[in-house]
Length: 196
Ligand SMILES: [Zn+2]
Image 1 (cartoon, rainbow, N blue to C red):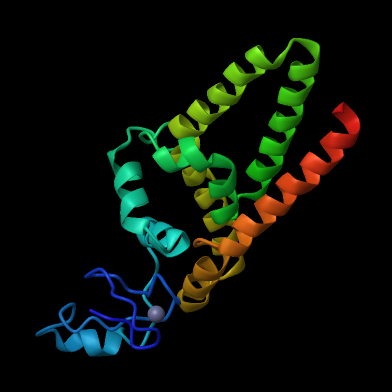
Image 2 (cartoon, rainbow, N blue to C red):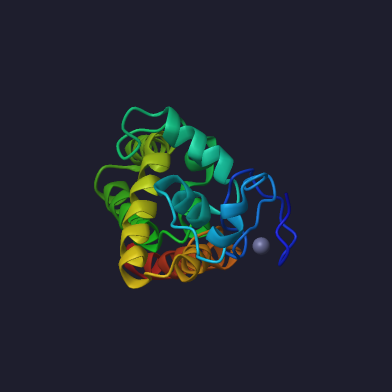
């Protein structure tokens, strides 16, 4: 099944396009059901899983699988190589700017330890932070998504408007990576004055 507005391939049973938020009319969903024609005139209410799918957008299968397999996805949801290797920029890509700011705080602490104790010890801490990102970034993303979904669900009572708001506020953003990059350059510049 494809979205008629943007052409993105859709999962069977999805009511809204995860790329643009448009209502989908799945012909198989109402096959042989004459009442279905009438029902389609009203927007379908969004379930918890569909809200997550719309919010995550790109790679939603990957994250939904991790979260569904986890006992408590808000606390731990599998290992993430992307989080381990690119945690800081990945937070930017997923528009988790509070976490980008938190990482800048962590860089500051590392630089402080560098000066007070020495580079060898700060390298352990840098690695430690990367491991924490690998271990917990899927859970952090789950918490972030649920918080945003709750807020948007309160603001939009029409399911079609909510679907579009979820797609707009969520998803992946290279602009977000750019923001993280600029934050990093900005920090390095300030740290240059403070520490050297
Ligand atoms: Zn679409």
